[in-house]
Image (cartoon, rainbow, N blue to C red; front, side):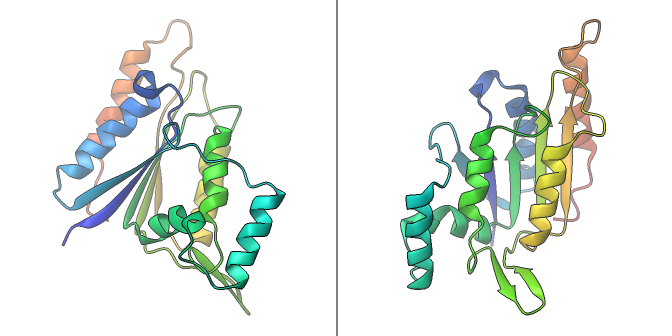
Length: 196
């Protein structure tokens, strides 16, 4: 039986996105294993709005009524049921685009992706590994706050293994952007996927 691979596409520039190119290299590599059925969540085609007060009130009422089957929770269910998750997210302003943050708000649902116990929060996601793909025009260095955020959130949701593939310095004068992106693609192809 094939595993569920969830591809979260937050590549604002679409097919022109360098993050998209890097993500496609990973998806091709994973699909060559023959283990996966891919489901895509494209945040440009299906944008997610941030939670405002009326949306929070509606969500709270649904949760209080135990109505976890409401369409509002569809993204959370898909996320919770994925075996492997690939997040393609460009590096913007030390973090990631607002669309991705709005998506994360939607999938963090108590009773679906995590639960609260007397010992603290416990993750409910079955994902064995989350991949975070990003690219940046400058150098990220120690300011990889987007990956650190998703790594921390993944732990809260029960996802213990995360990995980041990054190509940075792509807009630095004097550096070959194609070569730098190619290096990141080669790293993907050389990675050990036996942990899946």
